[in-house]
Image 1 (cartoon, rainbow, N blue to C red):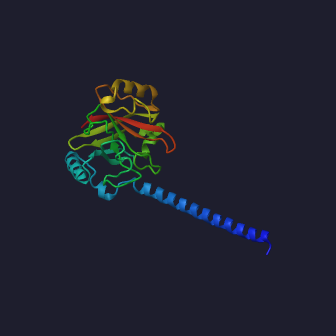
Image 2: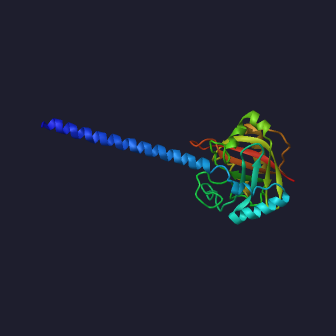
Image 3: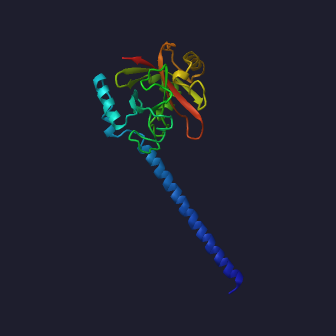
Length: 244
């Protein structure tokens, strides 16, 4: 048989093998991406096992907090923003990486948990308290925070509740700002915060702002999430904490 014909057949077999391998790799990657996305979405909304601990009143808030702390002693409270899908326990880790990809049970989760900055006091007694959550496209975790950049959404969603072990706060939403992950004023909560400078910044640069008479004597909370998965852009929603 002609050497050229043999070489051509061998070459065709090699190319066919490479093509099959590439197809298998593409299917594998596609399947992994689909599974990955499914796992993220499944982890974004609370199961009934956890929702039963959601506080509803002062007495129940204390009981629920104790029960949640039995599941995870890092649990500090529960945050709800009315008429949104933001309705979660709040954790507080040793660092701000502790609950990035860890759920309330201490297990790996791409969706992570909602957590208070490690720079803050655990009882939300700081003038500026910063809470983090992932942006998930199905609206889970802090996915709905990005909706507040829109005027209609901001105007029609103005309240929430923060349940702690011994205290309940009404949350009065007043600002939504778009910033980056290195913004000094936004990402310096707790004792590092200059509250007067922060409030002036929010008045001047917020995408949405509502005048409710916030002063430097007030306690505020910020809810921070990614604007998207491909950049350092962030969306942060602010509210005043009013004791009930």
